[in-house]
Every structure is written in C-alpha cells, then in structure tokens.
Image 1: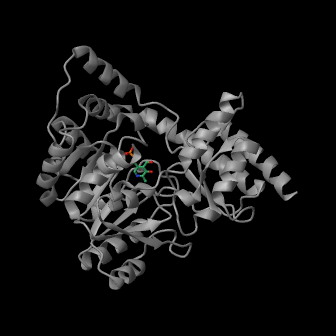
Image 2 (image 1 turned 120 degrees about the vertical axis):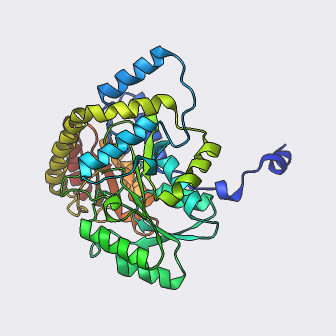
Image 3 (image 1 turned 135 degrees about the vertical axis):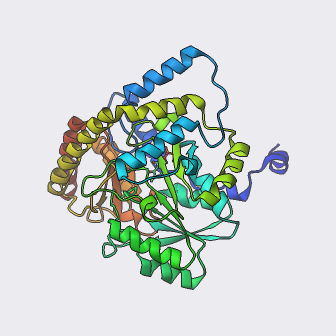
Length: 394
Ligand SMILES: Cc1ncc(COP(=O)(O)O)c(C=O)c1O
C-alpha cells in the first residue's frame, strides 16, 4: 500500500518546507487549557482585537446584497484607489492606483512577487533572524534564499556592506527587508533603508520591502521604500494594523513594468482576491481611529514588558521599535530556545515562540514574545516569568 502511494502521490522535494515550531507550542498550550490551566498567549503574531466596525458593517451589507463574484485580477478599482490615497494621506506621496495590486494577504504578495522577479536558482538575500516563510517560499519556488546574519552592530538589519559581500560571493538577484521586522520588532531608519536600497540598485539587485507592520511604529516613524524609488516592490497587508488576519487581504505597490506580469499571474493563480474581503478592506480605512486605539494598547503593553522583563531576568532585548514583538535573549538560562519555551509554557503557563523558528544560526539563544494581547495579560506574564525564572536561578 505504502509502495503504491509512494509511486502515485509521493510529495515533491520542493514541498518539503519546514513547519513552524510555534505550532507545537500552540498545541501544548491547548492541552494545558483543556485540563483547566490559564495560559497567557504570547506565541502567535496576530492582534487580539477584531477588524474595525466599518469593515464588518461593509462586509455585512455586501453579504446581504447577495452576489459576490470574481473581481478584477488586480483588485477592485475603488480599493486600489483608496490604497493610493492612503499613501498620500499617511506618507505624503503620490502613487498611481494603476501600480497597486490587491493580494491574498501579504503572503499571496510574496508568491507573486517572487514569481514575477526571480527564476529557479536565483539567489535572494534575507535577514536572519527573520520571518521564516520568506526563505521557505523562495525554496519552494526553486530559488535560493541567502541568509544574512544581522548583528547588534548593524542594528539587526542588512547593511550595504553585508549585501555587497554576499553579492561578491555569488551574484544576488534580489534582497528582501522588513521594517518593523518580525521577530525582532526592530526598524530600519530612513537613512539605513535608503543606503541599502541605493547599494542594491547600484548592483542591479531587485529590492522588496515588507511593510506589513507599518502603522505600528513607536520609536520613530517607519519609512516606506515607495518614497525612495519607483523601482521597488512594496508589500503590505490589512492583517496587522487593521487587525484583519483572517480576511486574507493585502496589497503591493509595483513598478509599472511588473503590473501586467502580476495581473497575469494573479489571474491564473487565484483569479482574484475574495470580493468580500476587498470590500471590507476598503471600509477598514474609515476605522483608523479603532486601529489607533488598539495601537495605544500595544504601546502600553510594550512599556509593561520593557520595564518588567529585565527585572524578571531577561535583560538583553533587541530594540523594540515597532510591530508587536519583543525578542529576548534567554542564553543566560538555556542554550535551547525550544526547550526553554516548552518549559516556560508547562511551568509558568506563558506561551512564547522559540527563536530557532526565525533563526537557524543563533535562534537557540532567543525567545519571541508577542504583545498584541491585553495589558492585564502582559502584567500577568511578567509576574509569572519573574517567579519562574527566579525559581530556576534559585
Ligand atoms: C513580517 C511578516 N510578513 C508577512 C506576514 C504575513 O501576513 P499576511 O499574509 O497575513 O499579510 C507576517 C505574518 O505574521 C509577518 O510577520
């Protein structure tokens, strides 16, 4: 039977991408909760709040009206125009709506951007620590992710020197950056982003900027690569700032030359993004006051953790500039971040994500905490971690 299955349906080599370890943490947390325990959830990177009321109202009205058909492959024109207006309102820059494409979350954007820009075998630089699907999607598409180890000296970002050094080893076709980043929450200054972009463009390296955590910036204002050049791919999403993870809707700002290839790709791969989600997304822009209120909760949570975790024993934390993540060094307590996270869950009932999920090089020294929950939960987490770590040292 197994032999027959192997012959008929054995999965391809390229489908053999690693799973997220956080899934194991989530399953263990669910077991604790099933037996009556209360877990503080800081493992999953998504807002606890729901979509703005304006989005939900618009979706209800669309459902009541009945028919929801396919839309234009590039997205509903009024949504593309509304996203363009967002660039004018938020960043003060003019973007032609014709350069905006609506995607199935930013995740759908990565697949299409990589397909449109790269061929099998192409080398694409990504920062480590970093969001794992970048490298896994590239691998599944036959491209080669080139992991660039970032350091405190480079403020946990790829620098022009690092990029050029990797390019000299073997030519790079592209580079992908995120600011604010996941798992660190660290941001690139406008100057650092501009310098890296200039270095990439002088070498003919294609530049992708993941701006999914824009809007959630606390240390300084996040800069968009769209201001710096028309020849970059900007990827964004309604998932985080607008609290719409489950709606699966995002967007890209494209160079004019890539609009038609992406139009063809999306038409073939998905036909269109779900109409209901696009309608809700357009209305979400009218709910910015709600999104801002949620952001204020994150700001408060960030301060609770920044004050409490060092006192609890987690003194080394990467710059907590934006997003809703805090990346803490746990090497004082463990050289195995998965075992550390597992034990913290079992004994302190605080769920976090092991750094090894984000960084195959140094991830065993770090744990990521997501602070998109309630402020009461943050206080509770700090108290539990302090008690647990003092017993460990003690
Ligand atoms: C840095 C980063 N980019 C992209 C995504 C994908 O988000 P979505 O597909 O919901 O837009 C995530 C999700 O956690 C992320 O952290």
